[in-house]
Length: 332
Ligand code: CUA
Image (tube, rainbow, N blue to C red; front, side):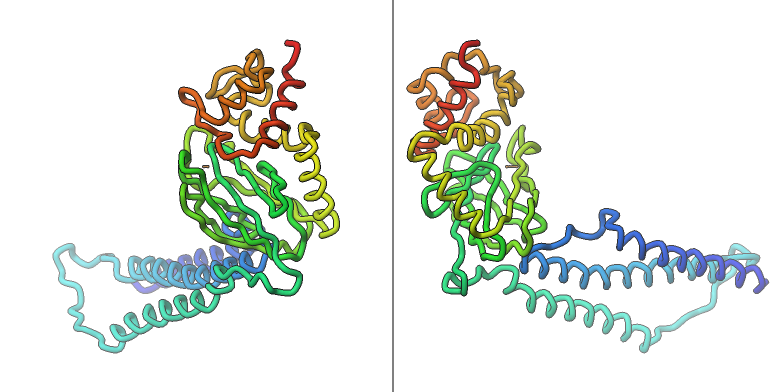
């Protein structure tokens, strides 16, 4: 009678140990469980909180499921008659106190840890900090991200920043648009881009490189193509880029940079990279691309299903886009 029970128990325990052993490599090799490697202090704090909570989650899961399986085996009916009563059990104060105290202790530990980490996640570093901080306005629109730098330079879908300098993002959306969500996992948590509201977040890229993310709020039919990247580069390189971009815009020579970015980010999301039409109509043959006044009016006012994507764009951006599409689609 007791021999098979012991045999089965050891099988169950063996399976549980195997599961735990398998969990180690799965966690180390990011099998979809581990967050991306953080590369900003706030992203580090988020990842720390994640692992702290995951520890308890695993403990509770293995404890509860392990006991469940063990009890199913240990207290199964076996050869007892079907109508025989099981043993009569009265309360166990010690056990009840334990299953109250342990969850309370876990919740207190989780809350305390998160409250300790929260300021490091949420609070934007002071503007007076050593090295200063870069201010960028991030505007989410169907279906692209627009970045405006303090000197007036504009970029679409790729945010260039200096390595090691705090970047303060003011995240918003135009009043004719919908809610989007800014999220570069390696550089911190999500923040919503809400029409008419200014939200704030930050990051400090600790390593040069390109970090990718995507709009994290369902915002319309082309939500899935609303991708963005942050490129962190040495400070001197960044200063050179941002100055050059501003000069190109002012002198009307930004067609190959801002013009192309704007077409690829804003227009191509709906009309296709070749203007062949996707959810929006084909535009590659459209005379509007050649006619600056018509293009400006379309961008500023929208038409039919097309939102007024360029309502808030400065004239430099419209000029750059027009110069780009005029050359690219001209003479067809
Ligand atoms: Cu913007 Cu989803």
